Image (cartoon, rainbow, N blue to C red; front, side):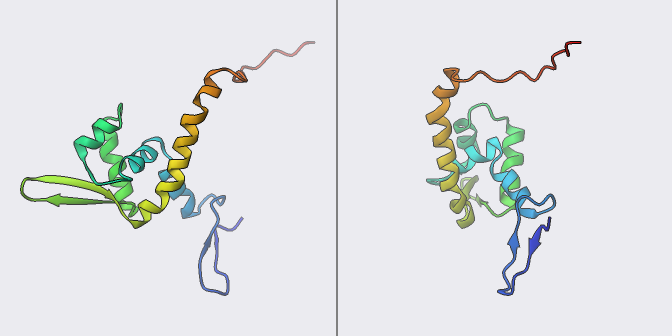
Length: 134
């Protein structure tokens, strides 16, 4: 399967199902647990590192730093250093805001359907191998 194609219009068309397609890596980044929550936390206004860490309960400093660097490297988040008083602010870029709405829908879906899953409407299937009868 082709990763990307160049139609006559000159625009590149990516195929997220292609193993080596760069769009697959981008999809993986923005849908990772901490990225989904980080983008949501930054949706309304810029935040400092400490405020982000408090908002994303359970994230370690190391993971938060790594995820912010990844999102910044991909152009989804910008980092601004203010000299006096020394402060670092993180905010979504235009492309970061463009992915915020679909991710907000995903977060809302998870919150809405959490009870359905917890109610045990259908128990998870066991992956254990059953012995064959002879």
